[in-house]
Length: 354
Image (cartoon, rainbow, N blue to C red; front, side, top):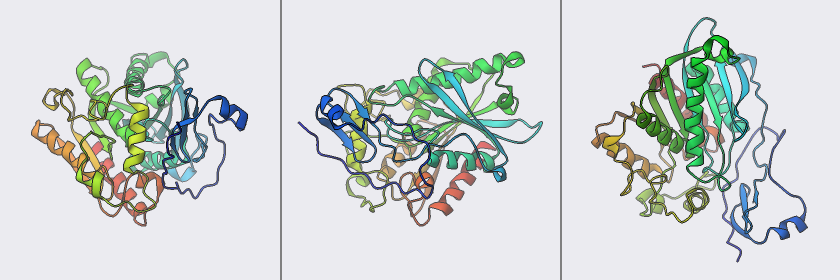
């Protein structure tokens, strides 16, 4: 039986489409062979009865190149060929200076997105240039083909790969970015689903103990994609404008596609405050910065998370961005997006350089 199509607000991009990569068949006959569509977020993803997945090229992918004014080196690096794990590095041209390293995970409900999406490429390049840090933007595996915790595995393996490269410093081909990194100032961060990944990767790092010669100094969570069976006030009642990037219905589809089969939204991958989740008091994590958008349906859930972390004795810096909604910093779909994005980058820079 075909599931009702879930609509998502149009993603507005000023740039024209360039090279794209997608899992799409143009043949109606091929589609029929896959059976009915059982889940769909219009314009982003279709999942067929036999498990076949389509991701229309709604956002263009771009090469690892940046404008000269940003003063950055930019290059894609393969981490693991077997799992197609790779990262796009952004390295400020600061000869002889060692800079903090931010390992960043993109959003997309665990189901879509890439460091090569033009919206992420542009945001991360501005972030690296303005904040003066090396950014490693990770391309992790996507659900539903790779349900959670695969994205967490890829995130943790990315950190372990950096550790491995650092221990081989004398004779490896990654020195072009590694020599620019101050490995005693490593941060993990991300937005939306990527923020969820950053939180879970930081948990694993704390549980694993030493990651010498790396030192994890902070976690940056931008509009973290958490959920739960019990709805928050903002999820139920916060009216979303037509240009909103996330609705409650879209959120629910992402969770159905990404959580382990048979799980509900009180699984600890979704709800870090649920019964049975790791006690926040037991987490061995560094200071956290949480960026929250006033018009985001996830606002109240983020506030609850911050309050719970403080009660558990964790260091939490909370920043509210007024007049904008979910993913404003990459979609530019609010009048104040550009101003608030500059503010966000300034807050991240200050957090990293404390």
